[in-house]
Length: 277
Image (tube, rainbow, N blue to C red):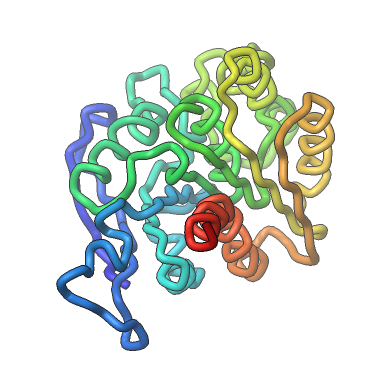
């Protein structure tokens, strides 16, 4: 596995931004033909790529510090990209910082230009945990032509309910709601409301497949159950799993492998059909 930390200037965020990328490389167990390495190892056709988003208080290093995602990506021959977004729910902020634009346009364009990853929708995925679980669905539903699949692990999926709860909670919050949404009282039905976003994608006829998992001891479990039921009632193509665990890396590290396998499931089926046919 090649692990690179890179810095790029972002026009959407008006600053230099650091991101990490994990690229699968030949291992000691691979029989490498150096004359056909690009084709043999998938570089020639472009590697599938997963953009992985962090949660509250996290950053670009959360995934690689607390999980074995680089090893899982190596085993599956998929590129993984991580980048920091602060505690901003991956939004276009009213003061001008355009996180949504950065993650759906600027960062993917840069990654595809510099690294051997596929630009095709069917090879491009996005996932996240907690705040990043919301972010993965939000960005995929914002740019459904870009991502074929989006996965949420323990996602904070109901932004309307989160804000209502925050108003009645006297505890300090890392989220500055008016800085993120300008008018958080109008979140329901807005471009930041996942359920409204999904309905609009249905109308347009371009909808990414969604994956959802949550630990049964997670404080967001009931929110995830409610989101699952609501989306299924809308006819959502939703894969749902759950298991014992809380809102922590013990659960997420176990579930990452399932998420990556789900990302690659259709690609593997297509490759098997070619081999058999």
